[in-house]
Image 1 (tube, helix red, strand yellow):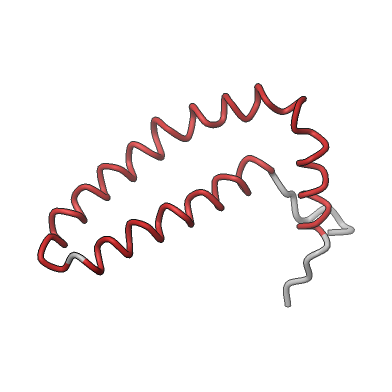
Image 2 (spheres, one colour; image 1 turned 135 degrees about the vertical axis):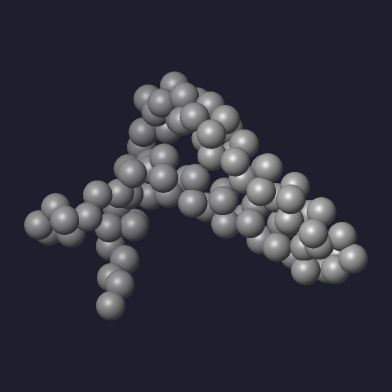
Length: 87
């Protein structure tokens, strides 16, 4: 961190958190509905492509528009994440 080798981007942190929640929902649904698994996997693939190519850019625009309003909150989050030591 001191040498600037790691850069924390708030947008990517947010996307990662939301993505983990959504993936957990999808994975639980696919695991619990064994008889519909092939169909659910197809739906997940379509959802994933839409999330990457359509939803993510829209969220980025909102992130940029809200940047001035949420600046202090993001700075606190960035400071917190910079303090985490991973071994």
